[in-house]
Image (cartoon, rainbow, N blue to C red; front, side, top):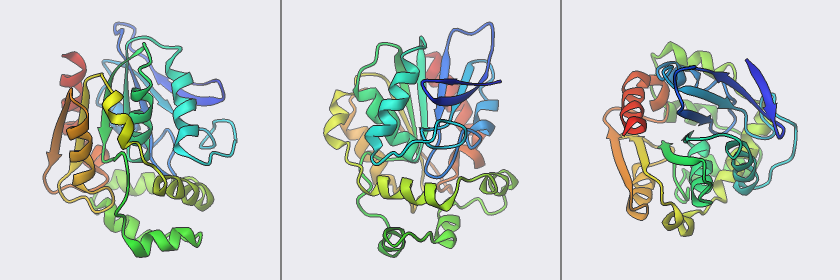
Length: 243
């Protein structure tokens, strides 16, 4: 069932017997539907799938930096208890920013295929974004999992090119490295060994700077890890949340 809190749209898949709340935060150009296949693997918890501000059915507003997203998600999680925030790609960076704010209700964080600073993205891809163009072939190559039906289904539900380009420009300006030492909650970092969009060293840097963190690098997987390997990733998250 869908609803809104402070302009952020969410769908809640509730488990009446659980007091643990998982908040899923999608990546660039996506919406709440992207991480639904992963949430289905975690149905023993209360799963909140949100649309970032300006995405999906959330209130339309101009967001110029990751701080705009961090602020919106921070307000959302403050109205919950016992929260684990789970973010993919841009959503993972948002999670890091939220975690650095040390919000009382946020107990754990899961960072999927992400980084605190995206400082060596493919130059040709980046230059096209700066010219308001999207190299979809490069994106498809980055995602991998070419034979995963779920991936193609999700590609049909992406936001507009305008939204995707804005998010990619925001990613190009993200630098949360100096905030990572402020993260004092247990953090699980998962990425694909064959990543080319958010390279493995991004995840390694997060692991280095967050003291209470665990890093899992999954072989033969790229950027669509939480979809292509959703059962495996779900098991990792389940164990982490229950600790």
